[in-house]
Image 1 (cartoon, rainbow, N blue to C red):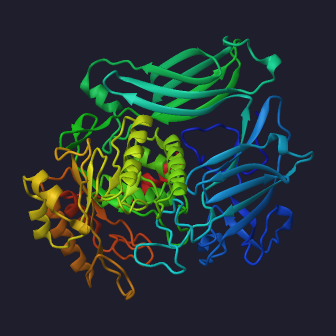
Image 2 (cartoon, helix red, strand yellow; image 1 turned 30 degrees about the horizontal axis):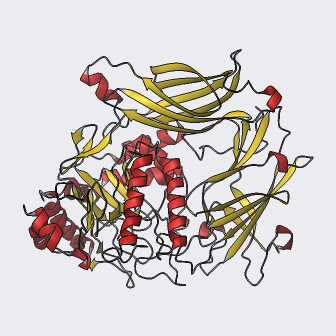
Image 3 (cartoon, one colour; image 1 turned 180 degrees about the vertical axis):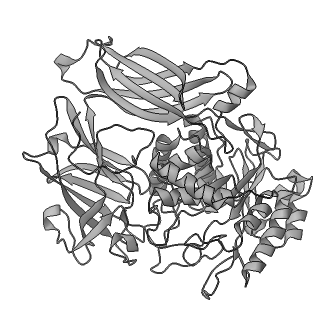
Length: 619
């Protein structure tokens, strides 16, 4: 394969599916806001600005910094493309464009995609023109008043209010090119079984050769090779004769039956062991047709009675709510170092995981969570109306989320709905209850390996874990509410945190399930800022730490809970209830917060952490 004539970036945008021949299109693009003109085709656009991709025009990092309303924005750039080799195809990849994207290559439409949080790609080989200079144009339509699309925390008002933030329009994650062969791996997914001590692999093999070059129907000339390693250790190696189409294989691992050896291979926050994978397609003569680098891990996530289990052992969840915004870049991580720093701070504050709130994170974030050992609850951004259109849109995008992310070991729970957003009449509407139940069961059908929380916060109708949101700031009342034995008769049927009933019945909602306090706290402290928002407020850093310590000491001791999720990690725009300011400066001593979070006195060497981060970025 020929390398593309572009400056490659350091890190691959899709860490679990890496080919060598790829190149980034991030950087400077021409831009048009489309305001005052009903542009339809690229040739009608007046290019009046430049923008830095992948940052949305609402952010400072984009070079635009305009948080006003957009209905459609346009992007254009060119690149130098060397001729493709025999049997090669050129693909363009978009990690996320909010909301409806149309893509033209050299004036030819090649892709249309709806959904602001999921990737899409297109084969652009036939749209290339003679010569080396090629052009890509993107139109992103994003009606700010449309409440029937999944939009998460993006405000529909001009100025952010309450718990909603500025909008994210257009390209907000990486754009990149990739050369792929006609006989190729189109997708790759991993799973693991500790009971059978094996890995599961699902692959889609595509054969786009001319009919005369393909084998006869029902015969195979393709060999699929898999090699798994952990560090320098070979874990498994296998070869399979395959036919183009879906391939499902179980890869048995050598099990010596020694617990120490087994534990070394298991993934957990304390020991995030990853298993590197190389998957090849070869012809009958052994020639490599395609090769993809990936990774996976051995671990299991389940529930047993009222406990959450990781690798068959009870684990107390210590999560923090993470909105995933940065000061100058909005929803887009500034770089990998910023991601690593966020994960490091989360762990230094005593937490073992995050509940990513109303955001599907970048694959780069999930890679670092996999590698550094951070548990992630992945939550679908909500729509805010219940209509046939909203049902179709959210379901389609949720399926794309599951397809992209279900191989990441860090993800330990799926959350399709939050606080009945988009299903506001759950107690009285059988149709809305069926909607939540259907997405719960659909998620379980596609990924039976993880717990699913059908509707987090209250009004549970289908769930593996009962998630409760309770912003009572008095530790004594929290202790009385969750320190009881009458879970079914008193807590779930009579208590109304947030003014909502906690469960609505249902065949799989039981008082014996794990209960996790998935939002609480929200104590605001904004320093010198006056116009801030929070669920309760303190005036000094010392008051914040004192209130946090009292609340966490109570919550950690509650027998009814399998874990908790504190609101929140960082200040986010007008919300000043973070343990960190928006620039990630801690509001109180990190070690003191960590001790309150976990009940343990932490050991922290800032010089060692800095050296470790440098090692990660350059290894």
